[in-house]
Image (cartoon, rainbow, N blue to C red; front, side):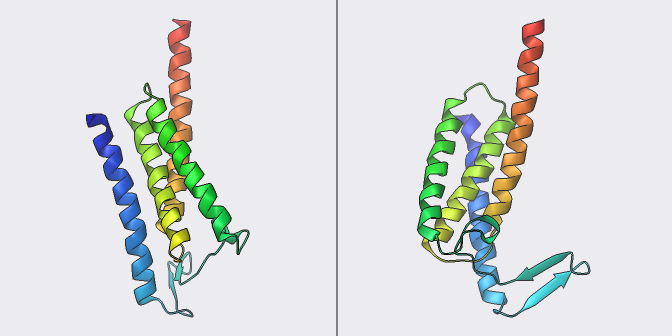
Length: 144
């Protein structure tokens, strides 16, 4: 049970960070306000997305809600199914799960661009790295 404490914290932190940044954006950014940092390399503006990642398929909010719930259920099941993966695997999965929760919330209560998408991408990249490293380790064990 102890091995699930850090992932539970990561899920909660990702979800809370997503909610906080959405509320800050709604509170401090007007519809036409734009704040550029680092010569425009980073930009904050208020954007509503009724579609998928990067604004694809606008207007299909219910479709993406269903997909998000299905992905969440699959990720939770996979998290508990894979018992031999290292702690970094659990953290990667927790990032994806926390981001999926943020996206589900966003589909139910319209919001802005969010941390959820960034957390999901970070978790997915970390998951690919962990699975690659674990496969490499298992292959080395078989050879010995």
